[in-house]
Length: 36
Image (tube, rainbow, N blue to C red):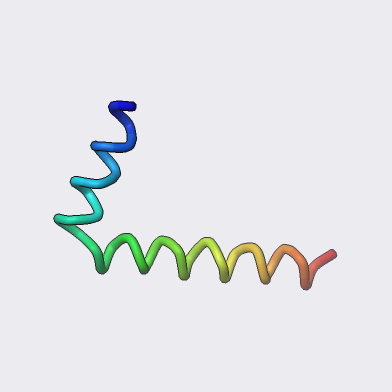
């Protein structure tokens, strides 16, 4: 599970970027559902 350790290190280094990505994903999903 090398990918898990990579994500874990990224999360430790850049937690704010991680949360921003979650927000962007959530917003894009909401926009797609609104269009449909």
